[in-house]
Structure formats: structure tokens, C-alpha cells
Length: 320
Length: 258
Ligand SMILES: Cc1cc2nc3c(=O)[nH]c(=O)nc-3n(C[C@H](O)[C@H](O)[C@H](O)COP(=O)(O)OP(=O)(O)OC[C@H]3O[C@@H](n4cnc5c(N)ncnc54)[C@H](O)[C@@H]3O)c2cc1C
Ligand SMILES: Cc1cc2nc3c(=O)[nH]c(=O)nc-3n(C[C@H](O)[C@H](O)[C@H](O)COP(=O)(O)OP(=O)(O)OC[C@H]3O[C@@H](n4cnc5c(N)ncnc54)[C@H](O)[C@@H]3O)c2cc1C
Image 1: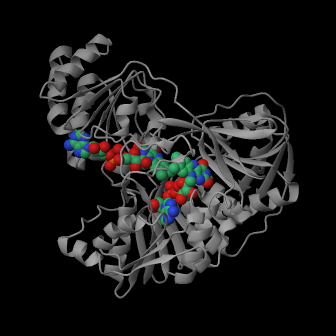
Image 2: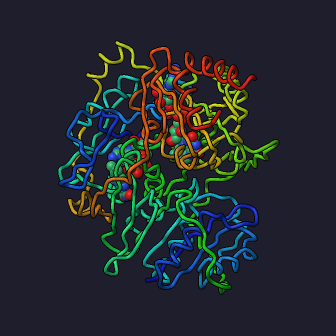
Image 3: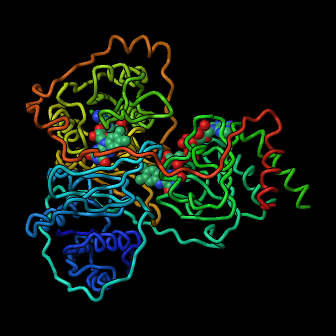
């Protein structure tokens, strides 16, 4: 089997999620190549050898500087056509998902997403896909090659096994339409103060709080418990709370002793960032909210009524 | 400006299930408009209202009943709806779905194609990229703030590293985040008026597609088997009758978390 792994990078590092996928590809076996796309990225390439790539193909071009998907589809499509990779594996990220789906359409190739694992059976690749809020696990396959797969963030850990990778430059040929979207501003959020990743207790707020002014409810409870405050993407995107506090696929991954979710539906992209918490308590007025599926204690009720009372009781017990 | 919004009918039950016979999603119950499509429809309506004369066209592929789900978006204010429906299209995956949608969008040639955050049944969050590729148009995903001016569209969107601002010339494809706006509720007048709005139905043949280009035949992925998820530890859900705060404190004390 020949496999191509998309090595996403940021700054001067290949992302851990991509290295996790690379390690999985190496475990599945056969010839494993990585592809690195960007501007000035060649120096990062050889390090991927340690995680199982025999060769890293590098498309290094100023036009590829911005982390935009469409020119990356051009690069990967040409490689798969020329070198005949049977599998193309990517880590699920904002960039990775768009690259994968664009590539699926370009190559008329099957794409399975949200995979947590992959294995071979009778020479065929079989993927493991938890679906429908993780209430069922689908075994998925592909009807022909190339087979495309996206792996859920955090599902695979990098395993150092190999050595140095051979680095080979490739000349990108980019379509006109691929270059029409332009990055006007690429913001980098610097985090200040203690990170929520180190907190033992996290109280998280979602859109169910009703408005930014109600974040004081979770802030007060967090303070009473000696914990930190976190948020969902919906409230961060709406400008209610800072980006640094976001938990989930695109935000931070946390594993505190206690995670209290207030007014959070529990979307899969939120879950992947907090499911490793020791104890999960959730408060949501909708008895069917997916968050209850993975809470140790779920409370069907109104955050505005319950959270202030809870804060009072915790203060009384802890003497805060 | 002409704006197309891709919308999907999803099962109207919170607990969606797979059909264990067909390995496909159980679509036997009532269907509803994918909740994440309402933000895309809202954004289209706002753009139309701001930009002057224009049209908002809904495009969907699904069973004939998907027309009912589309009516909710018509009631919000969309002008007309196009439903691609064909028995041969059942069981389409990403490759097949994007092919049919792109063919319908090609005929309409809108200035802007909008998508919602994801489909609540498949949780794919990918379709726009495949459609944009087939249309050979620029694409911006996960957009939390959208502006259109001087023939271009600009989106602000979150990534793992902060916020990007991306600009693309029209015609373009944009997928929005669920926080981009607060969707309006259909008014009674809107609901009544929706019944009279044009709802066209297209077969695969109408789009110049063969049966083998859609449905399972036109798909490149398969579901081989279904399994139950690994069992979870002890857990319980309680209903707040005024004493939930006390119960939470008791639970935390039991777990030695206080
Ligand atoms: C590529 C991608 C990446 C993403 N990354 C992330 C990520 O990193 N982190 C993340 O969080 N999300 C992420 N998302 C978004 C995610 O899919 C959800 O849209 C988001 O998590 C929803 O946030 P929420 O729970 O605050 O809002 P909603 O889904 O709107 O849920 C609000 C909940 O509050 C409840 N509620 C309302 N009023 C009350 C009340 N008075 N009392 C109690 N409960 C109430 C409602 O019943 C509802 O369940 C991502 C999505 C995509 C497509
Ligand atoms: C549990 C489950 C798992 C699946 N897994 C896979 C998989 O791994 N690979 C695969 O190829 N297919 C898969 N499918 C099939 C896939 O969902 C359909 O092909 C689908 O129409 C493609 O869109 P999406 O799910 O990627 O939509 P998303 O990318 O999640 O949706 C983005 C936007 O497109 C809209 N949209 C989605 N479908 C349509 C439509 N038919 N018409 C108009 N607008 C639409 C949505 O409403 C949303 O606004 C799965 C389906 C289910 C139910």
C-alpha cells in the first residue's frame, strides 16, 4: 500500500495531529510519504521521518504561504496522479477538512470523515467512524482507490518510530481559481495569563447563558471552586468571550478533574476538547441535549436558576 | 445579487438512528430543516436586503418530503426553492452529492453560494469545499462575519491559531458559522406566503446526470457494519425541581471535588 499523509504546519512546526496520522499510516504499513505545503517550509520536512515517513514531498512556494485550502488541493491532486498513492490521510482541522473535500471532488475519490482509527482487512482499508453524536460506531470503507480519510482531532497520538526522511522538492502547478481567495489578515492570538489547560476545575459557558453579560454566572462559580472559565466556539465567534478560553476541536484540549458545562449543547467539536475530563457535570434545559450523553451528572434545568444557587452553596461549604 | 443557499432536510428527532438493515440513516420519521441552515438563510436575506435587488434561491438534494423542510426557509423570506429528487440519488455520499448540487448551481449561476455550519445528521462540515472545487470558484469556510462589497466577499473566521480575514472575488462559495447571526423566525405572513412561492423539482436527468453518477453507484464510500459504542461508566440525569444545586453539591462532595 502507498499512503500520502498531509503534514499541516504552523510557524516552524508540523502539527501534532498530522504526526499522529503519520504514525497511524506507518502502523498500517506499506510505503508512507508525507507532503508539506507552504513557503519556506523545507527545513521542517526531514523531522517527519521520525514518525514514519520514508519521503517528504515539499511544495515550497511563496504563493503557498497563506494556509488556504484550494492551492493545496492542486498540489495533492498532482502528487496522487503522478505517484499513484492509494490512500491520502489528513488530520481533521479547519484547513485539513477543506483540502480533503476539495481533493475528493477533484479526484472523484471517496472521503470518510471523523475517523478515530483505521486498519487493514483482506488488503482493504477499514475506518472506524463514531457517528450521530457518538451513539453508533460505523465501520466504513471505500469502493475504489484513492481512498481519502480525515481523522478526528486528538484521536491519534504521534509515535516516534523511524529515522530521517528523504526530502524531495516538487514544483506546484496551481489553477487560476485556486489563487483568487487571498488572506488579508492572518491573526495570531497570543495567550496571556494562566492557560485553562492547567486548571483542575473548569466551568464552561455556552450560548444557553443568553448573552455575554451572563458570563458572570460561570465566572462566579469558577471563582468559588477555585477554577478557570471556558467557552464554546458559538460564544467566542459571537464575541461574548475571548478566543483563549475556547475548548474543542479548534480550541484547547483540557482534562481537568471537574468540568461543569452550563448552557452547552455538547456538539462533537466541543466534546473532543473536554471528553478526557475526570468528572463532567452539565446543566441544560433541553433533556435531549447531546451533552447529557457523556456527562457523569446531567441536570435538566435553567442555568439562570441553578448556577447562582450552586455558587452560594459551594461558597458556604468552602468558606469562600 | 443572486444568492443560492444549500439546505438539507434532516430527521426531526434529537436521537437520530441508523437503519440496521440498510446501514443508512433512518429517515422514516418526520424531517426538518437542518438547524444550521437557518444562519445561512438569514445571512442571505440580510445581504439581499442590504444590497438592493436580488434573489435568494434554495437548493437541496433529498427525498420528495425535503420540500416541506425547504418551506421553512421560504417562510423566512427566501424567494424560491429547487429540489433535486430522484430515487437513484438515495444514499449519495460527498462525491455524488457535490456533483448533483454543483450541476444545479451551475444552471443558476449565482453570485454567491452559502452553506451552513454542518448537517446535523452527518456532521460532515465539508460539502462546500467539494462544491466549490466542482464550480471552480473561490471558497471561504467557517465564516463568523461576512461583508460583500465591490464585487468581492470578505469573511472573518476562526482557526486553531486565531482569526483569519479572507477575501475572494465573486462569484464565490462561503460556509458560515452558527454564530454569524441570530436567525429570524418566520412571520405568519411569511408562512402563508411560502406556500405560493415557486418550488421546482429536478431529476438527475434534468441536470444531465446519469443514474450511475449519483446514489450508491455514484458514491465512493460505503458503510460496512454498525457497532454499539463502548459502554460508558455510571451516569445519571436529574430534572431540576428547585433542588438541583443541592444535588450537584452532594455529588461533588461524594466525588471529593469540593
Ligand atoms: C470545523 C468546526 C470546528 C469547531 N470547533 C469548535 C470548538 O473548538 N469548540 C466548540 O465549542 N465548538 C466548536 N465548533 C462548533 C460546534 O459545532 C457547536 O456549534 C458549538 O459548540 C455550539 O456551542 P453552544 O453549545 O454554546 O451553543 P448551542 O449549540 O446553541 O447550545 C446552547 C445550549 O444551551 C441550552 N440552553 C438554552 N438556554 C438555556 C438555559 N436558560 N438554561 C440551560 N440551558 C440552556 C440549549 O438547550 C442548547 O443545548 C466547531 C464547528 C466546526 C464546524
Ligand atoms: C452518519 C452519517 C455519516 C456520513 N459519513 C459520510 C462520510 O464519511 N463520507 C461521505 O462521503 N458521506 C458521508 N455521509 C453522507 C453525506 O452526509 C451526504 O453525502 C451529504 O449530503 C454530504 O453532505 P455533508 O454531510 O458533508 O454536509 P455538511 O458538509 O455537514 O453540510 C454543509 C452544509 O451543506 C448542506 N447540505 C448537506 N447536504 C445537502 C444536500 N443534500 N443538499 C443541499 N445542501 C446540503 C448542509 O445543510 C449544510 O448547510 C454520511 C451521512 C450520515 C448520515
